[in-house]
Image (cartoon, rainbow, N blue to C red; front, side, top):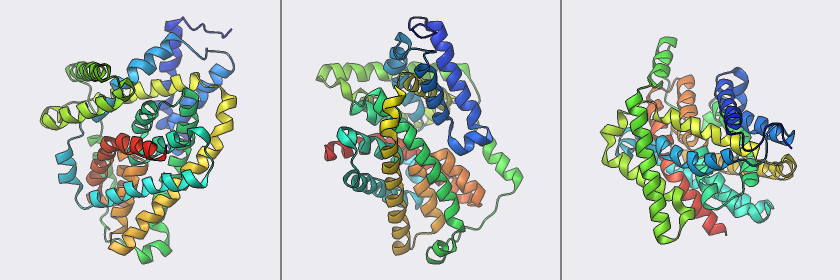
Length: 377
């Protein structure tokens, strides 16, 4: 028997939310910036369950996996105004489409190069979604293709480590003379420390209770309607897709109202981190270690193919290296890290396009990932 019983909901809530807190804390710590808080949450949760501090199954896990994840999707997508994305992303959006194709190509090539077993097509789709959008897309695809919790834990853990290496590579590319000689950049504007702080401050949300409650109520409503649609057509496994579609519709019918919301994205991230804690808690470490290594190499294969295609296209089509890196980063590591890359490199005019392309990746990532799984299956 574990130290904390499965039906001790308050104790289980303390552990899960405490792990989420630790993940956010370490994300702002030097160690976390190099490794990702998600990895720490998954590993610590796995250690707690495998050393029998907490159980492998609990009603608390059922609530998090059954309801909290679905509520997080709209909260993370309410600002996905497609017209604004295309308007503000400029030429970078074209390169982002190339990056998306490159991710799909890498997923398919890696699928045939490596023996991923029976879960291969599912992982290919989940990784495609993750490397076009982000962790939320990887999660959404995994639910649509019905990955088990153990399979998802191995996939997200290996993917997180690959994403860290991808981020480091993107930062290093502009310093490699062999690359800059063939793919030059004309973005040389600089940002002083005051401007960097101003950009950081502009990304911080304020907390308004009416905003949070309104966003949460809307998220509940979208999930309820999506569930009703799934029940009506007998396709409940696609509920996450219905949630995504309805959210995008709402975001594009009422873009001004959605743009005024403050704090809803952060609330969605809280739900996601609690979900990662739940996934780690319900995973058998033995099964995880048996499968994670090959998934790491599979993820690296996708990244290598992706970068080769994007840089090759940049050379052939005379795309600026800075634009290529920002577009690639928007796909591989998401909007926030991409904005950080642009800031640290002094590419001030590419900060907004990077964020917009990253949000667009959230919009299309799940659909692209599911399509890849269906194709390979």
